[in-house]
Length: 413
Image (cartoon, rainbow, N blue to C red; front, side, top):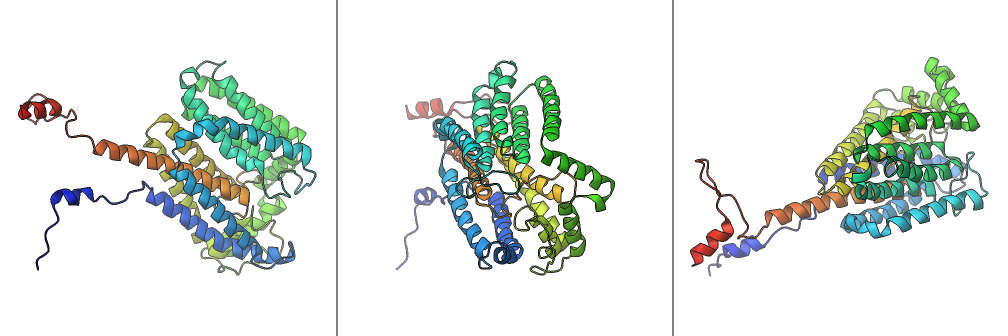
């Protein structure tokens, strides 16, 4: 028996399920996560045994749980229309500020000279603050865009938002997180249409305040002095940087092989977190380190492309702000280890061990992908316009435009 051909109209109705996923962004994030888990185990198994008194896979198992939590947050954010975040913005900001105050007043445990975590260090509100401030500023800048050129409605409220958040973080103290928030805020103010005449004086004030903070905090003085000495003579840099240089030099071009680095055994500080890029450079060489850098550059490219194609200013601010934040975190982490910047405690996104940072970064990726999804939905709706929509049927011979709606009605009569 011959099979009946499927009618043309039935074929047209069968559309593939299209979720609006930005494939290059997704592949880049998965690559960074996969490579990060591999390098984390290599950098952390000895740390898990000797420092934490646990089994070799302890930190890897915890990081896998963080990947699941962060991945779930990313999937939820991807399917959640970012416009609907508006009703949660103020409660999110208030909860973040309360958590930052709890760290100051109710946390007695000090780790590496700072109080940064709640529930025995398992939650770091400063990491939450970075993402929440970006989201808050995106909605605020979008709503107040026509008032940004006025000092009392533009720069002053902006400075208050950033100042309160940064001040609470400085009390921990966490200089790098506070500086990151202030820098991201300034960039978003510029992207949102802020006046350059307001931005330049703000930068000068920020530099002056930053210098005063360095003079107040002994930690800041030590970091600046060791940075300057390291610029003059790499051998006089901080112990952390010297050991990082040692790992990079030992790795050479192709590396010593994954799992075969020895600086992580001989005193490289916090190899699974702050120094994991040095472990990558030692075990995979300049080639592996360059691939990681290229992946972050691709991430920046795709994130900014999603922002550029966003359906509205709010989507542009969210996608651009989160993308620049994650890329900036990576740049700071890698630059510190080669003494291009003063020492900072920024994690290497997707790779460094840490639940708070990884979860917030993955949630941020979900929001970026949500912007891309909304762009795809809008484009699909425009492609499926009704037949009687007003269209231009003018040919190249210069004939007039004809309305499709009127034409169909006239032909029917």
